[in-house]
Length: 334
Ligand code: AMP
Ligand code: TRP
Image (cartoon, rainbow, N blue to C red; front, side, top):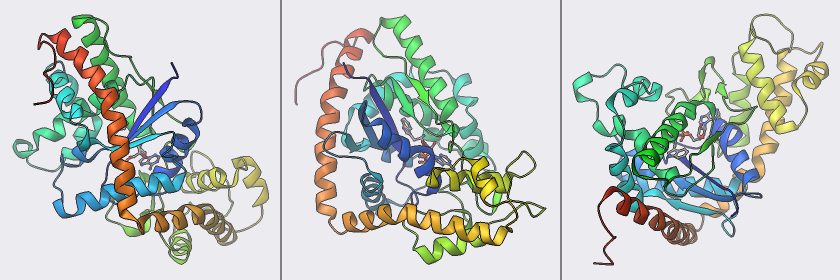
């Protein structure tokens, strides 16, 4: 059997450069050699306050961004999580396998629940990584291509798979995180200590895949730099290190090659060249995205097709889970 990869993206905010360089780019590359499943995880979006009116539109935009980045709907399965009911079903069973202590240790839970009143944090936010485990385990995926921020969630899904297998018999493939060596953590343009994030409230921190060229240029020109004048990467140069990494990933040159190319130039010239490179790199993605968004019915059709293919695989797994845990054979259609 061809090895399988599974990954997901939330339909919140606009997809950005960090998503592209840390995730989508690898998702596109992996679809050549793997049986690939990419999911718009709309149920995960319900774990923080959300806007019901925006959810469907954001989901369609997410699919358009994936196809625009180069995901091929002919060979790769792209679908909405809520369209495949088995995700919620397996999530419940795994909730009963997971432990309070291991969920409480999740860094993303701690970060996202910080600041609020501890008693009113949503229970869904606590269970978030269990739903994520269900996403992957349903498809018996070997690899989970994600950015660095997801490492701990993948570790947890491995633990849940191993625990389930030893308690109920071999059922799940134990997946591995596929985290790229470069680009796995793109930082905010206005603060290199903070990751580039959809939830940022500072518009200049993020380059969205749909930003117009002039806006991309403006954001890159206003990016913070480090003290000094030289265009070099290093531990004491977090801002330049991030900008050089972005340049390198779009341009194909290594960071040392770029340091050499910009030796003696100031930050201004470097940023102008970086802006051009990013704009050219994003141009085909942006154009294709706008074209796809012109036909939402076609995007919905592709998502429905994806959901049907996904459900066929997911049902096979959940049927054996039901038998193993003692729920008996799955009833036929009601
Ligand atoms: P999210 O934006 O949280 O829905 O994440 C979707 C995918 O993009 C996940 O695989 C993340 O790990 C990845 N990702 C998100 N932000 C970044 C970033 N700043 N740098 C690299 N990868 C990222
Ligand atoms: N938690 C992931 C993120 O924020 C999104 C996600 C949900 C996911 N389910 C997944 C990623 C399954 C990989 C596999 O980026």
